[in-house]
Length: 244
Image 1 (cartoon, rainbow, N blue to C red):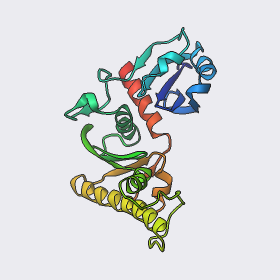
Image 2: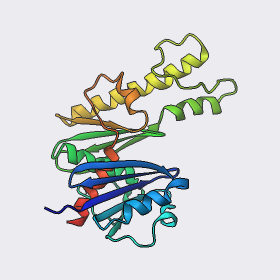
Image 3: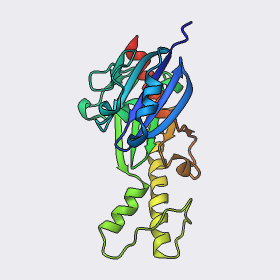
Image 4: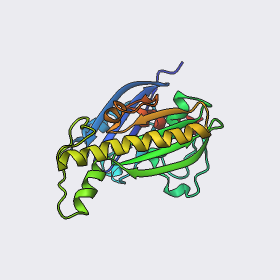
């Protein structure tokens, strides 16, 4: 059995996430900013023990920071990259790399099972995968901070409150009402969409990830699988499938 490792990189607009895998096991994970990424990238990517590398570069800035020589094949995630699922999305060129990776991760953890993948970040994305490994699409809605910012920006007097962990259901001042509306409104949205998909796909598995996942999971009644490294596992799934 080979001892060589695989690396996946998720390069966003402000942060870079790197993960090293040995087969399907996540060995190491590191989060960097562009200001401090050159030395870690050189250390990670300069090893002769690295067998393959997949890069998802949403911001398009990573090439300026990569070492000149990388001693393994490099796969850039784009519209031409082979995916482990059948993509039925109509506008394939506009499907985000993060959504592709999350669908692939669902296949990794729940093979041949219907899955709803929810990514609670700046926006909240919902993606549905059926038991035939077909990606059907989903929906996108505002995330928690975007909801608060929108209410502040598009009104004359509503404030933009600082976030608190699990607001009260019944707010007793304007800031508390805004926090309650944003939080419990999103909880209701998630539970409603989950219930609708459960009717269409019996035995549905629900996966939740993203920056607000833990906070939301505390009040969601539906059985869900919360995983902070879901996207990295999905990138690795795409890497191993593409390299076959």
